[in-house]
Image 1 (cartoon, rainbow, N blue to C red):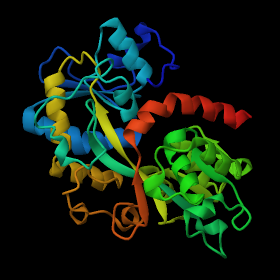
Image 2 (image 1 turned 90 degrees about the vertical axis):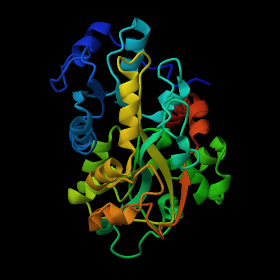
Image 3 (image 1 turned 135 degrees about the horizontal axis):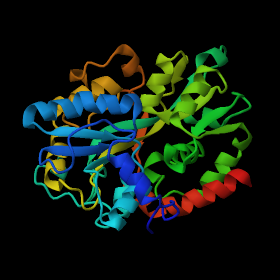
Amino acid sequence: MKTYRFLTTIAIGTLLLSACGVGGDSGTGAADEKALTWASTGGQFQEDEKKALQEPFTASTGTKFTNISPAEQAQVRTMVKAGKTIWDLANMSWIYAGAYCGELFEKLDDPALDRSKFPEGTTGDCFVPTYRYANIFSYNADLYPGEKPTKINDFFDTKRFPGKRVVYDYPKAGLFEAALVADGVAPEAVYPIDLDRAFKKIDTIKDSLVFAPSYGAIQQMMVDKQAGMVLTVTARTIVSAQSGAKLVPVWDFNTTDIGALVIPKGAPHKALAQQMLAFVTEPAQSIAYAKLTGTAPARPEIDLNSVGYTEEQKKYNAFLPDRGRTLEQDKQWWIDNTDALVKRWTSWKVG
């Protein structure tokens, strides 16, 4: 089943204004053979991409970058359908690239993008991982001065551990897998997800759940102590802690996932964009990006001890030894089921 058909198509004129520099950096235009237009999330994370990934590529090849934000699937659809693709690379969920591979996104065919270099189950025809992260369960130490949560089951135990639980308002944020494991399912048996069983388990804490519209909102809620527990991504956990939230990670069970740069269909510089993708996953750039963000390099042969993580980054890194059970989110299951699950999720929240 193709996903995200519900996304609204935006006006082409607005898109072209954005792509030409509104909301982005000024830079060399797409007509330049040594130029790439890069769409991403904006904020500090895009600044980290510039420093760790783009600047070294410019130094090595002379390629200039135009940076655009935000990177949205609706914009990709509009560009491709109009035959006016402007972006060369976009930092967005691999689900889009998996669902619309060859239709809205280019298949990756550069031999340098050797999929054997990456962990099993983390690649597709239109995507390879550029970094790895986890959906981390942690709690605010200030709100649990006595007994402490020690396992994923405690996220679903509001009698022993009362208080609000913050989750990102999107099904793929680790909640469904966590619900099943807390309900007694072995991690290796989580997929295919038994949605009826998962929803039944999540129902037990529905009144205590806060559905955050953004990662920034999650960060603010945890800093302001509006909730006692949170399930969120590595980088946002680190930033929340740096902003003053006394978060303690619970290393029992967490899901892991990948970040990806994808190439929209009809990208002006597909070959150069693929060279950039290969460059991004090389050890030097992977280590530099991981050091800035606290995420993990995509390629498993890179020694995490070589990254130079701060002590705070190490505290929230699910890929270090002795961090409990982890489960890589099943890419094909999410590609096939996200559309239906988002609809069910939306109805469930208001039901």
